[in-house]
Image (cartoon, rainbow, N blue to C red; front, side, top):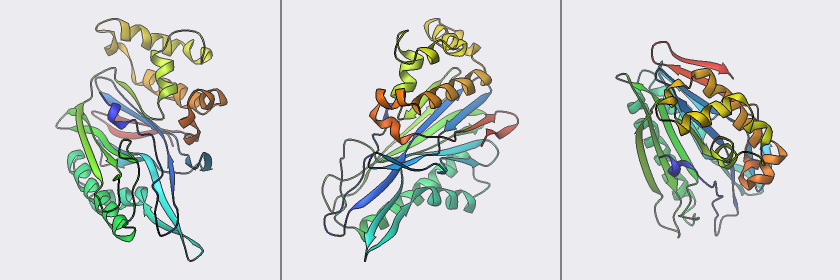
Length: 280
């Protein structure tokens, strides 16, 4: 359902103004029960196969009943006159947009912030007219999850760079209702999918033998049992998947896992009580 979000996190290139470097990540996990939404993410940034930092903000609180998230390229920098210049700061764009409209609903926050991101990308293309990349894989994914009129939903947009200079960035939007039992790893998701949907045994034997993983796999196989998955189950699943992705075994299994690193952050959005951090 959410495959469109599994970005390969590419770096854009410039033909005449020096090389543009993308600081990128990430692994974001969204889960749902009948009355809660769980969202988790790592905090790493990386470029050219190396971790650069572990303080990136990828989950953003939205009002009382929602959150937005960022996956893929975090910032874009280039060298101008021998100095590093920040060409795009997508977490900054998101934070500013949400702070400017603090009382907006989930849908309105998503639409307003999407417009702000599109404007930032347009300005980037004006500054670097020869910018292009791989149009088959998104370089940025932005989404919001939460409750609006008691309905749990997720809205996402993927951004695809143009194949040739002078062309416009392409976007693809999706909107889905979050159903109880959903557990969706987004981004560097291969390890998570192997743990929760793969066969028993190697790889990730220790993770697969965790009781909550075995419970979730049983629920996937039996009709109606996904509603038995609790908020605590989803948080535990997210912790297991994030931590396994961050191990050497995870990086050997998935070449994109190098973009994922702790500390990891977890939040719950309760249908009645609203947003709360469980680990930040």
